[in-house]
Image (tube, rainbow, N blue to C red):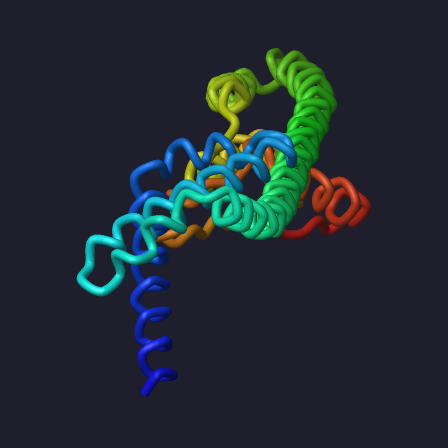
Length: 249
């Protein structure tokens, strides 16, 4: 019976202290988040003091329950206060170590995420720079060759020269719009390549056959601008031009 009584008393006191801790931590949650970012010593002292206060106040609240009033004279003795502070300090050191470790882990994760973002940004910038360099290589080469062909066709074949110039103007207009954007669409790129290949057909004649096929549902798919042209140019330069009979794109 004495053991059961002691157990029930301890259970009541521990529940009062536990709920008191829960209530206080709920109320001062913003303060705790600020404290947890401070130094290890400050975190430990904060939890030690607040723990000692909560335990003492909880014991004091229990003394108002019938049968527990005999604890009141002992409550504010130096022995009780010292014991509560030492226990709170021991627990707070463990809590401070846990919080400090979690904060360090979060800081390391944030630093790693920021480094990854910097690397990805640098890779995107490098890719865009390479694309611009590729565009710079493509455009002058094609520009001068086409203009030379137009000049060569003006006297013997003026209608063909006019057609070539019209296709060339359409190509330049589409290219200018494309190079100002970071993203293009398959529909825009196919239109650009249609004008590009129309110019090449005038130059190569029957040696170049062109078939353009793009499903309507794919026309809006985003891709980097000027991504298809190098493939087409390489296919013509290395695949069709060396062949007398030509071929098809």
